Length: 480
Image 1 (spheres, rainbow, N blue to C red):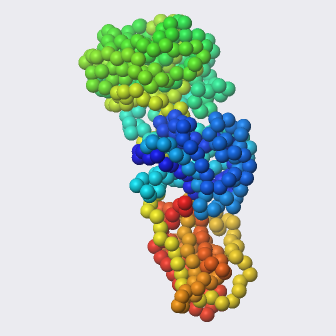
Image 2 (spheres, rainbow, N blue to C red):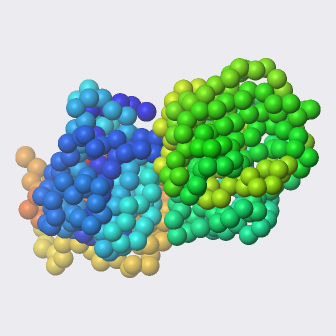
Image 3 (cartoon, rainbow, N blue to C red):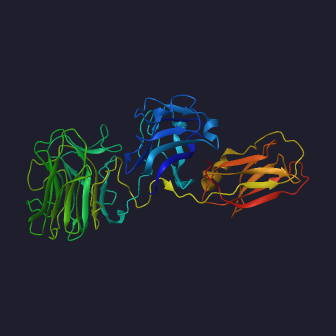
């Protein structure tokens, strides 16, 4: 990702395409907020609330911009970090109304005096009134093809990778105090756990691997298993991660059940969410707590296999169940992921190798200028259109871009004039938008256009005295 001192959001649009209301607006990287030391400014003064409310970590204070401000070509919110900083994600706090919640925007950074568009970001989910939404635009998972298990615990015990995890003893999905998203695995007492049958996906062999997740517990005084491949007879095969008297621990077992690469380090606190990971890269095993390396070991031994994968229980010894919450279990075979301290994601692990929420933006367009002659006055400034047909068109061509220009009477010099301007899809020639240019300046503008397609404009003399003039192969741009 590029590092830059100056960042900004442009092309902001609310759900109802009118007023925009936000309680928080954070720039993030790796799932963590990074803009707390940056100076935030805006091109327009909010109609209500203070701009500082966007960074005060309170969703009770709200900033609102009216529709004319949001639609202004110069509307932008900017940050000065003081030094070059990587930004890859955005987090938005809602106001009171869904219609005024941010739906889409474009993220830009200043490089060598030129504003470059990193990405177009859309589909901000409505989190409910005055609520901090999820981090959107988190980086893709470059190792997703090697993921063998991924459990989000969002309403079920389903594994994204298709393995069946069977609950025993009555663990539930807790939606009252989830660690991430809308739900977490929760065991209120001993005897509750999940099991997935033996699979080649659980056999680490000599490959690099990583097993990780989040957890919390009301008490960490005893020994409680987070995840293991231990058998019902107590044979240790493959990785096991657990907490013992407040210390995070992990080890691997070989085919005969012998333990190697044991790691112990860090302190887990009661009633405190923590991130854990245990991995192997080459012959080095590392144990991570909240992204920090707390222990390591070296071994060339081969991990044993042929056993089930259990979450929250020791199959060989009763009374070692995890009592508390577990979330975001991910198991990767063929990549160790981490070799140094890292920043754990605050949101869920990605469900694909694709970047979430981002869409590349093409090069900026040229403005569309049509030199025509027009004379007769026309009664409206904007042509009406049928809502249903427009919605159908926007499924195909809608987006964050804009095409704009001027219509003029050709002469020496050319003079602005009012004209009917129709926007057509370049390839199919289907009409997409239509409007009247301003009678004084000749300016016209089409917003909400897909930046990944080309279009043409056709300007017509209102009185029919002159032939239409076209400008083709126009690529929409996000106005700054």
